Amino acid sequence: MDVSSDGENLKPRLEVRLSGMSASRLGRIPFANGRAINFPILFAPMAGLSHVAFRQLVRSYLPRWASSLLFTEMLSTRLLPLEEVGQTPQTRISAEEDDLIPQLLGNDPRLIERSVEKLKSLHPAGVDINMGCPVSKVLKHNWGVGLMGDMRYAEQLVRSTCQATTLPLSVKLRTGLNDDPVYLVEFVQMLEEAGADWVTLHPRIQTQHRKGRANWEYIGRVREAVRIPVEF
Image 1 (tube, one colour):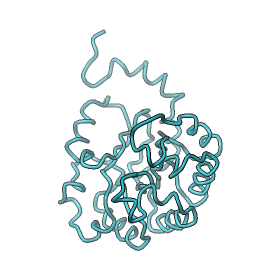
Image 2 (tube, helix red, strand yellow):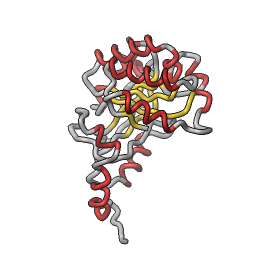
Image 3 (cartoon, helix red, strand yellow):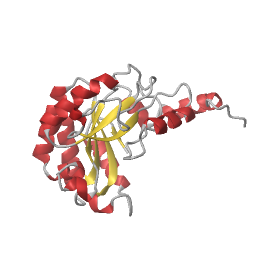
Image 4 (cartoon, helix red, strand yellow):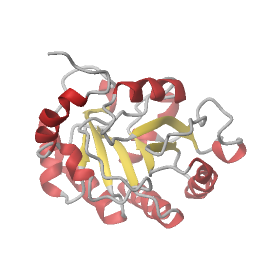
C-alpha cells in the first residue's frame, strides 16, 4: 500500500486501534496545550538526545492528526534557576512545541519551585519529576531512582511541586532500588494521593539500568491499584 508521508492513509486503521490503547487514558488530563492525547506512543526523556533537533525529527514522522507528548532531557534543578531558559541546548525549543513536558532532576522543593517558575517562559504542557535515573552520579545526590528509597520524602516532593504549579504533573520511575512489587504498588499509590496526574514506569530495578529482564507484569499490578494513567 502506498502510504503518504503524513500518515493520512493509516488514519482510519490507527484511529480504531487507538480507542483501546493506553494513550486514551491520558485524554482526561487537562494538558496546557488544550488537546487530548490520541496517539499511543510518547517519546521519553533521554539525556543528551531529547533536544530540540531530535524532537523536530520525531514530529516529522508523526501523522498530522496525532496528538502526543515529547519530553526534554532531564534538567538539573540546581542549574536551571541560574540559566537563561530557552538559550541553553537543553531548554531550547521551536515555535510549534506546545506538546512539551520538561523533566526535572533534583530533590530540593525550593529549587524545584524556582525551576518550575523559570520554565513558564516555555509554555510547557506539563511537568515531570525524574525518579528513575539509575546512574551513580545521580544516586549519590539522592536524585532519580534514589528518591524511591524514601517514600515520605518523595511524597513531600510531589506535594510541594503540585503547590508550585497548576500544570499536570507526572513522575518517571522504575520498579525500585530493589525488586519489591508490594513496595512499588504502595509507592505509586502514594504518588497518586500526593497529586501526580500520571506516571511512567520503567519495569527494571536500579542495578539493571537498561539491561536484563523487564518485569512487564508489574505494570499491570500498578495499573490495577491506582486510578491515574500508568504508561511504560
